[in-house]
Length: 94
Image (tube, rainbow, N blue to C red; front, side, top):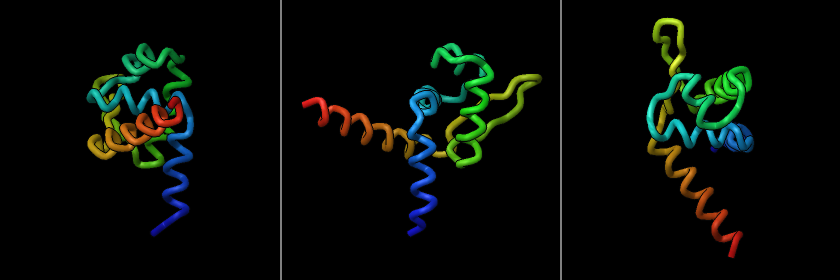
């Protein structure tokens, strides 16, 4: 087991804006402008976070004319990860 890689994965998800981006991408592919609207962050900020997520291998992108559209590389896995985070958050609220 590569603990360093696992740790880097969770560090990447340790940012609230990146978690919101990942949550939005569980709904399907989105172009940067659509992500920007949903997570209420600037285009530059969203682009920076998407770059981090891409480097970590969580998202991939494709170009559509002059836009970049992003999607989760493993949407089912990320949905399970988010579900575990939400479950732990509910437990902590009890």
